[in-house]
Length: 427
Ligand code: IMP
Image (cartoon, rainbow, N blue to C red):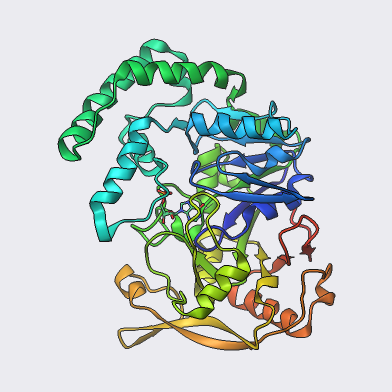
């Protein structure tokens, strides 16, 4: 009954789609437990590239049941568009299960996400503009609309009237935007309800039963640890809990059921949106990493901010997630460097920090302290075992592992399905 949780150990975009795909054929369920279509997973199979935003990457493996669990927020138009796109490419989608308790992203959530960001000006979070934050805000305020509400016309209308009574005041009077019409939104969403119905299930029950029956469940986190609402660089975070604890609440599994926590960590660091990022490079090395690593957002197309590996961040992730194994991605991108800087601590306001400083103010002022590791020139994208890597690349991996505080069990040396070195089984 293994339940494996996969978490991003940095600010997201660590290459989780590739990791999930690696184990995708060896598990029975792949579950998304938080976030929505703010995520962007790229999976490359043969010469086909799939960019998924909302669907679990398990949808691409014919023997896997993909699950959108209760902790996810769903934009139905996006969901159906993604399903349609996959069907057109011959991918079967009818195995998908969607929790009746997941919350719906409504048109007013998208509108509010955009206007509040504009209103924040220089203080903006840099959200994806998909309505994620406002949807979670309504969930916590107990004014959200869940998947199951769409199947009861009376409830849906009641909830919509209540929500729009409030939101329309804000949209029109605070932000000077047009309000939304209850009937129009009602018609749109009752239309989605019929399309959604065949997928809807009690996913928590299904997953617990699957574990009881000895099946393997893979819980696929989106975003990353430093974007977690509790453990990230608040307020420059997403509005859910990508960390491993969030997987239990977001999927309806007890913590004692989780058997392994795999942290996905990039051989360097990237971040999208605003907020502190000590090792960020504003010079040509930042451009070099961006170009070599193809660091452009899957969801928004925005340039990702790039910097060197930050060991205190990896260690922090090990701590708050209970990481048992790391999957180190994009090691090939670092080929061609004579020396590779690795951040081992920070200086802020005259104090040396070996761990992430406790307060955001200090973290904002953190200047990285670097150690320099030997680089390598060889193209490592054809390596298929750890031993085939140049000695200095092996040493880079071993040093990161020691600093991060958990074993590196897999290494990505390219985007393809076969470009992964698995040192220990992740399942
Ligand atoms: P939101 O999730 O759209 O509310 O955006 C909040 C913050 O999380 C912003 O800085 C986004 O750029 C960031 N973010 C959201 N999803 C992802 C992701 O999948 N990868 C990287 N950053 C993300």
